[in-house]
Image (cartoon, rainbow, N blue to C red; front, side):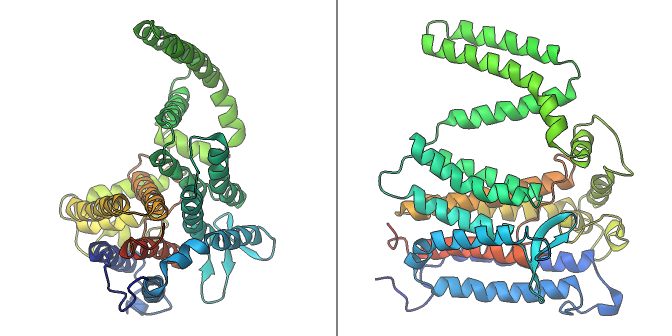
Length: 422
């Protein structure tokens, strides 16, 4: 029987402290990003920062409730939670029910807030994936188990893509690291990396024959090195042929599957085109804001790019610009350090679990948070195209804050009861 005398029992307070620090940083920077002099109070509910304060209070209550729950309850209801979010993802696609914001039909208007089911789908997918992979005789190296695990991940991706919300769709790809931790061959990660590299190079290099020549040369070199290993030789030969075929297929797939604005954003990031007034405006202003902060920043509420609203969506997707401009490189390093500390802490928690369910879930949490953190910051400094995903616990948004709170505190609860779920 779990010790329920107090929810303080065995709680990982280091993780809780990092969570509170990031929430507080987010609230103060949302205030700086969208400050309205006529509503200067930080808890004025007519403003985004006032709404974020309410969301934080709700999130803290939800966190306490999770800590008071029985751990087995979370595992037992994983399938039900997953089905509910899938139904909600279907609901937002119904005209007149789902609300379209910024071109994405991804919200349900509840009156007091807008609910974004895709944010909660990340949590329920991690939960069900952990429930399935921790089952008896389930091995991700077996085709059946791999396909079922892949299906759990793929279903919400398909529904979210229909909204269409490309950023949230891509987040689910990070769960491949969970499968890798549970025994998936590293070749899946290598092949994925090679495909991404070929995709980028095929767009940068106009003549595909240059890339094909390089692939043939690399293939022959590797085959010479492994000339005594017939199985490896066959694999390298097939891999080289497939890679060459992919090079010729990338551009047609790229042109047909992506919208014009998506191709423009990718072209700007890769340096194929230079556009600082239209498609590249957001990232250009973002880099100006971050760069102008220099080492120590311009000071809280003194950022010109921030206070004069030069950067669009600065309280949501581009909140890191406010940190970079007003708190400088030093402040940015503190925020990055908090995220890295949180990720390291989650991995430490994962590896000390005696329950496969808790360990697998922990790696799901780490994967989702890492993807959001890495892509969002890379997007604001121009290393990645703009795909519209929030910075965890810092960006404005009730659904985002609540989903990350539930995601993280479920892990804290599981960790506080390491003997609970087997």
